[in-house]
Length: 257
Image (cartoon, rainbow, N blue to C red):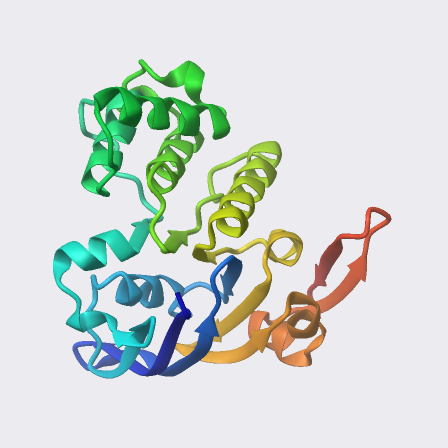
């Protein structure tokens, strides 16, 4: 797998342009890329475009050098996994059954026992195995978000797209979720793209940061490099300081100008 690249992507809703000539050099296997930017900067639209849920007006999305829009639906489903920001919790399914359905839909191989074991393993790794027989609709927002993460990771695709997967999680679960994503991505050679609002989480867990503003990419590179660029603070309308903590992690401090 050579990577995922975006060339000159332009997306509009009617007359309103949402993505403007977005180009991203290849994202490499085994890496986590944090997609950052203010609200309405185009992060979700970019993820949905990569997932094939929003057809671009112009430009190309390339996976292993092939335009992703030329892939058949079955091939795209095997190649790209998308975990949306808003989880559909109305279905009358238990947590176990919901993750089992996700595994089967994603093409999990093996007999029933093997797939069930895979589901049990990811429920344990996401620390929601105690919820296995609870109905999804009865869970808290944070618990539902962990179920969505488990669905995305139970049968990982080469490309994993996650839209704000930690927005409803407490601090411990945020750290655990992103550490798990990073571990699975590195071990299995996936490409993970994660939309986030927490800059310190991105600094800690991402190999690369793509910063967006008003539908365009305004910075792209290693976290330390992007957060040191004055364009980052200007994009958010704040003063940013990137510092290394006593534990060696890059931390981002923000203040109003």
